[in-house]
Image 1: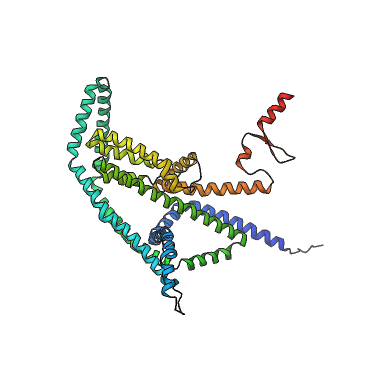
Image 2: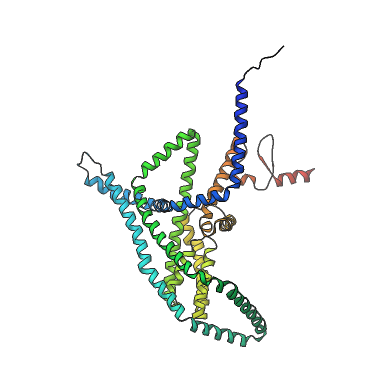
Length: 426
């Protein structure tokens, strides 16, 4: 007798599930094959949208200044101006003037960089190139005198210089000369990137004006989308994570910029008093490289010391001693006062995050590796703490210091010395 097949919805669910799994596997395989093409596509998209990226970065950096101006200056002023108005409360006026002042502040900083610092840097570099024969002669005379005073190292120096000379000639013949034909194209590319940089900056400033003027509207739209996609609990956690991320990034970036500006200014004042050569150029190098945590002072001190060494070896030694004192001042007094607890991790993790970030993303990885690692570190720490609390286990790190194990009955940590005393008594 023929048995009739009974239809069950679970067969449909199994079929749909199997289809989705197979389709996902095929899409994943295709994504792996077309990964370079996808990467180029994302790079092209990022290149097209780079003015908007610049605008969002400018907006993010100017938001604290804009809010401060709106709260302290234009907010109270608008209340007085629109006190008797029934149609307007003055909020739009306060926001517009705050955005205008923020953009003018940005333009003032860029103008100061272009009109004050860059011409002097160019003059310093021009003088350095013009006086390079004299510097080489001074360095040669200093090295000759050093070798005369210490003849035992002359053999090793001569051997090393011979190896360097051979390597330099090979580099010039095999690398520099074949690539001289690309010089014109490189110059053209440099001019193109400079023009694109100015274009991105101009469009970015315009974008930042629109975003700053409608900051609350953009935020409300983002939250609306967030709550439409995720549950209320998950959306709350995401908003809390974004708030923590914003607080960490803003505190670190603003603190580092202010700290580096102070260090550069102190370096310029002291170098001017000590009559160091190329004081402004050296101070700019020290201030800019100080933005990079941990390794920044060493990165800036090396080229600055070489520049001063070419002019005056004695002042180079004085400069090195001054930089050591300046970095001690920054690391122990200025930096902690400005940054406060925005980092919140020990030196080992700071060094780890910088090395990892530099290896993966270069300069930007060195610069932003610390705040990104702080966010990841805080997320992992919070997850571990919540898991321990749900299991009724001790969650403070101090509870696990010198701990032998956790008692399975009381869920309390048993210290090592208690275990040792028990063994001794037995």
